[in-house]
Length: 157
Image: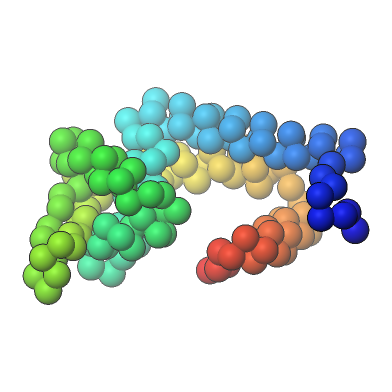
């Protein structure tokens, strides 16, 4: 255990793994974003918003709940939703029981967009991630990700 004022530097293996993780995250998201833009005209953030909305029983979510679900700042959600509104993928609805609150609702255009994008997104995720792993590795990574999320206070749903 390191002294309180001593930095517990990463060893060579830890440093190599950490950098691989960061590069994988950046490269995977960039690749998924490029492919989805080319195939469906959506960005990863567009897809994330539409996925949450399309999975909601009412097709709408409070902005604050959307921010929490995506792990985004509320202002980022508001700005992104405004851009998506211009493309008629979503709309905002006032919250009848809270004058300061608002809902984001998926539109017909947004529903069509997510339905068009989802198959390509799933194919890309399968090709880039799951086809490279055995079922045992998938299970083990799931356990590891759950444990890591628990350490940073995120619920594993």
